[in-house]
Image (cartoon, rainbow, N blue to C red; front, side):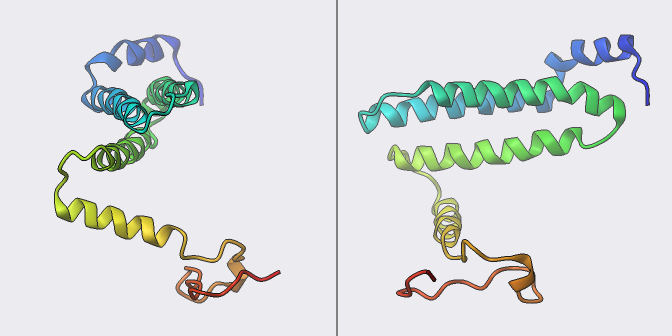
Length: 145
């Protein structure tokens, strides 16, 4: 498939008026600010790695969105994925800062966080049960050597 440069240029020019991209940039910056506020609260230096990571993700999304829109594949999926990640990160950061967050949201995040380490780290797809998820480790057991 050959891309027309004039159409690609028009797609890049239209980015500032794209609502999904505006929301993405806003959440990206807000997540960066929440992370900086968290680092001030716990008296830790805000790292350049966070700044570089946020900038890299923004560059990735803004750089690939026009190409994906011309190809007609997955542009909204890409942005939505990062929107959800930033929204979760912002809510977690606000909760850690002591800003009131709805109980239901905190409950879902705590459930996700507790399930995070519950699965075997060395599971192999062939060892998984038919449901496709690895079986949770039993608490109190030491990992196999």
